[in-house]
Each structure stands twice: as structure tokens, then as C-alpha cells.
Image (cartoon, rainbow, N blue to C red; front, side, top):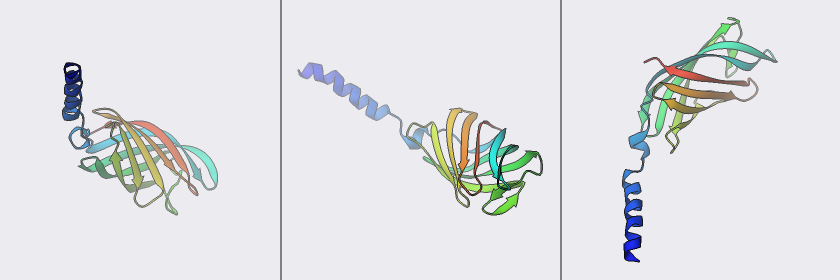
Length: 150
């Protein structure tokens, strides 16, 4: 019985010692990530599709916690407004905070000055899929593969 249990104990110990810890294995996410994508948004009371250019800038990583900002600009049509709070804009910079999940692939973020919620999945060292949602009264949704530029 003792001999049969020994390999199991060794395996459990090895998993515990070599298993991932969030602080050690969180991907190096700091930097600028960019994408161009189409969004659906409520603008002037109507659902419209518009092209946007986005940057996610992760300025600080502390273990599983991240902080930064997302910047966007209307591309087509160039005058297609968006909102930050109640302010109508064609470009903006919005701060966020976030946390990397225990799987070291999923990131959950929220804007700190608006209603945006962001979910991301690390696809590799230089690619992240980001899904953005914002609720009423100025709803927005988009999804894109972002590439690291620095």
C-alpha cells in the first residue's frame, strides 16, 4: 500500500511545486496593442456600424493586475460620433483596470470613467483578442484581434 501511494504523493507534490502561479506566469502584457475593426453603436438614437481604430495601452502590470487606457478614433465615416459618458466625440482615451484570470489566458477589464466592460484572451506573445461591450444609453460592441506594436 505504501509503495502504491508513494508515486501518487510524488506526482501531487510535483504539480504543487511546478504548477503555475499567477505572479510568475502572467504574460508580459505591458505595451501598446492596436487594431482596426467595425463596431455597432448607438449614435443619435440609431444602431449604426462604423469603422474604428483602437489602441490598448497596458502601462502597469502587477502580478495578475493590469492598468492602462484604450484609445479610439472614428475612421469611417470620420464624423461618426461615439460617447464617453454623455460627451459626443470622434476620438477618446479611456482608462481601465483589469485582472488576468488563473488560466493566464483570459483578462477581464472595466473602464474607470465610463460603462465599458472588456474581456480579452491572450492568443500569443503578440496577439490578443479583445471583446468590448458598453451598455445603454450609448451601447457599443466590437471584437478584434489586436497586435502588439511595442
